[in-house]
Image (cartoon, rainbow, N blue to C red; front, side):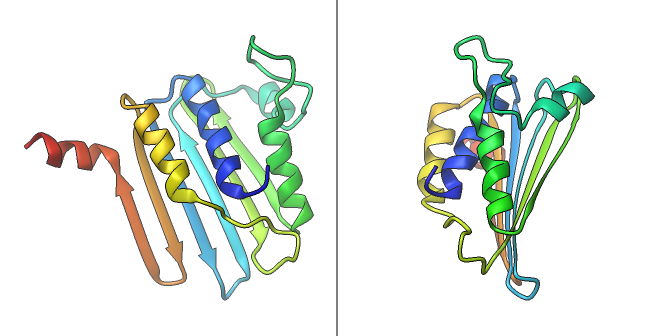
Length: 155
């Protein structure tokens, strides 16, 4: 994948496949700490400890449509290539949190990419899912909440 927005798209599609009704995407650009953090949290099926350990294995997937699961393994590789890390927290029946960190200034860090196109695709293609997108760059914060948007639209 050429940019991080495509990784976000892929991971969120996993959340949707896991029947998540609420997905929170956070992007934090912390220039002082030279850190980029992407966090995706859902309320889908979740994983047990065995599933968490196998989640970054490219030859493991729970999907029946293919025999490989490259999404998390490619994201994990992208974090390692830019002096970062990936963390996965999950509980069966409660959901999953994927947290990917990158050294912001690292020459091998992929660009964030077209996040607005990624969000547009996810929101338009999944009207039954609530999305919260939060983006922070140093002290500037932006938040988009489709549940709030829907409430305002329905009034």
